[in-house]
Length: 104
Image 1 (cartoon, rainbow, N blue to C red):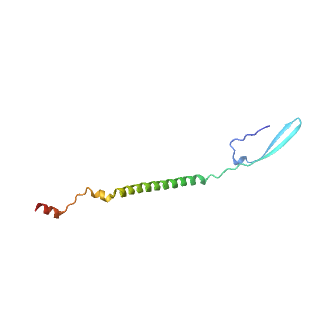
Image 2: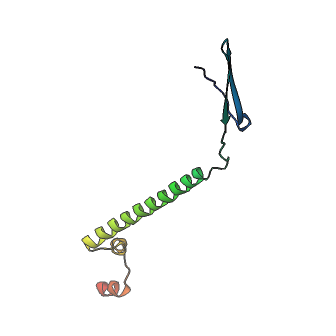
Image 3: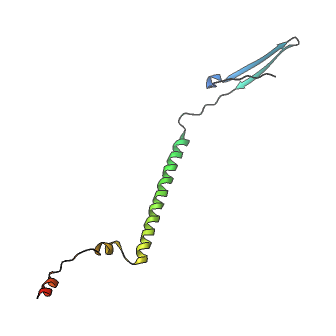
């Protein structure tokens, strides 16, 4: 039994190979057809994978923002105040009519 090892295979190695054996009893030939397939360089699978990953990341980011917004809205409605009330809490108001009455 014999074997053949072809290293650095390329499309140029495609073709019909003949194996010939000779001894005192005679000669025997065997023919093998070798076809080498090389895929195209522009593989769309990688680009599609990257685009799908980016799209999924954007969807997850949008869901995270939505969840945080809903959580914040639920907290505000639970305590019965809004951001406007929080901003007006420390507001100092000037009312001239109240000041005049207090000095008279």
